[in-house]
Length: 383
Image (cartoon, rainbow, N blue to C red; front, side):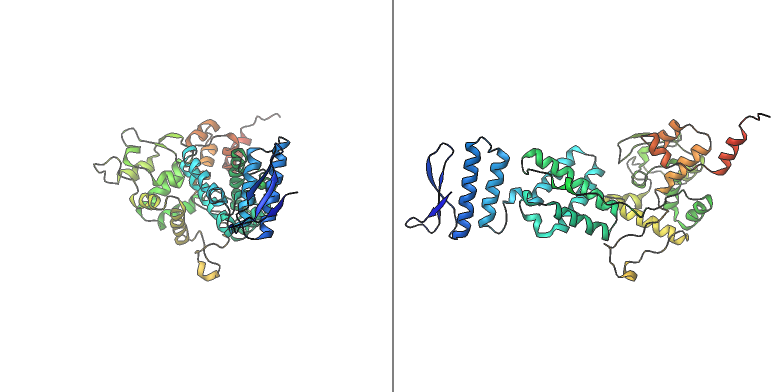
């Protein structure tokens, strides 16, 4: 067992330990507190014994140093804190992932760091499954189970990298289960009557955005970022690359959509946005949230949604959101369903909307009764 001693002219306790080769040596503990010094001496000794047995890996050595440092310091090694590691991991993701994905990761990591508070400054090796579970439960209660589960998945991925980097021994996030989602919005397409109400309630720019969503099935961000460079009125099509999936799209314009674009005076700059206000809002906020809120106001004006008031509930902006069956994303359901109901093949419908798989396309498809009736009536009469 390691023991302590004091030497002249030094206020610190000295640890007497045996090195892996059997030699006895003295190491300063760097503390004047005997109790802390004994813990540090014990850590020295355990590391030495592990080295003698050939079991002192780089990961274990680093863990020992971190434990020794934490004994005599109120905080852990800054370079290996949970916050520092996660932020460095995010920097890697910025170069490895698509922009939208990296932004999503950054948002979820920040939510996690906010929930664990001061523990974010401690060494990442001290992060426990209880810390992660607590953060998960708070996010689920204040926002949605889906957001909480996604946060856990992101932290799990980051800790897998920390494990490979040798910063931790085990991935504590693997011990945390995901929350079962009991409440789920029953998304549906807009009815044609509802589309007309939306167009009547919207200003000119939002009318164009809604028509784009309805006739192309594209996401709000991709529509908001369209420029004159993406529009070819001569050949009547749109060419652009999606933000989320980097998919190259070449879409024919519906006549109603072409009529709308014909009303917009073309400028000299091909990079000028087709929808200037929406474009500026998307660029300024770097996410589609504010645009979604603007669309919600159009729905409220059209009588298709309730007014969102954080003050009336007294719960604030971090309160759990009430899920709505209608959103701008539902226009993708409209496009997919209309194409399928018109008898368009699944492959063509997927290419137009930008779905990567049959399974995803099926989730967005709502076959109406008229199409079903027509299909049944096409069956042969066997009598």
